[in-house]
Amino acid sequence: MQIEWLRDASEMKLSPPKLDVLVIAPHPDDAELGMGGAILKILSEGMRVGILDLTNGEPTPMGSEEIRGAETRKASEILGVTWRGNLGLPNRSLEPTLTARKDLASVFRLCQAPWLFAPYWDDAHPDHVAALRLIEDARFWAKLSKTDMPGERFHPTRIYNYYCVHLKLAAQPAFILDIDSFWPAKRDAILAYQSQFVHGKECDSPSFIDNVEVNALYWGQMIGAKYGEPFNCKEPIGLKSLSSLV
Image 1 (cartoon, one colour):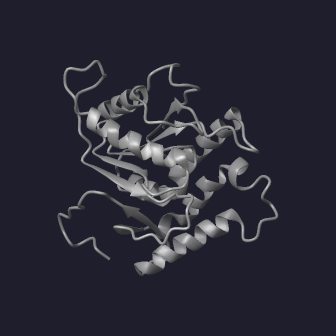
Image 2 (cartoon, rainbow, N blue to C red):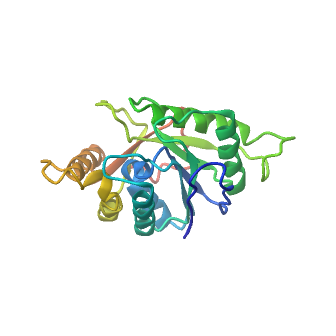
């Protein structure tokens, strides 16, 4: 597993390997919360999965850059991802700037991942909304010719959207993925972020992870499984076969 952790966007350029799937998260822990089970399942099928965090997620009440970095590495090891990087953009003031668009498009051109996973478009967190706009803009830029961006021009096939939102939404996903076998490891990956979900919240009842499990049970029940994760997409989803439908 390769991890590239940047303190800020000017420090260095990322060098991801070729990937089948790239999950883009506004903050460390968003990927684990929104689709930790899917990441584990995709990896188990022999595909190469990377996570790109856009910010370091700090400041937070119980965290620090060093703590979040260690927690992210631990979560990445639990998931067993192929690669993880951090674009070094500012937390709490994430914006889809031209510089950020170029840096993100460069990652897309280098890793050549046909499938991108991004936050759902309806959210109260400004960083999540800005992240999706940045991802969509960078997807377009990644296919440009006559540019000084590294790598070969490339247009990711689809952006799929995972749910890690700060609204009480009655979600209507395009599909739900069965993650029965992968819930325990997803749970462990989430709990790697002790500063975010455990410290300072020891008296909460139900606990944060209890609520995450209730949601996973709900989505699993919708498809006749124990645990599930919902996803959406702005573009039509194509199927080569009906054999995988539940």
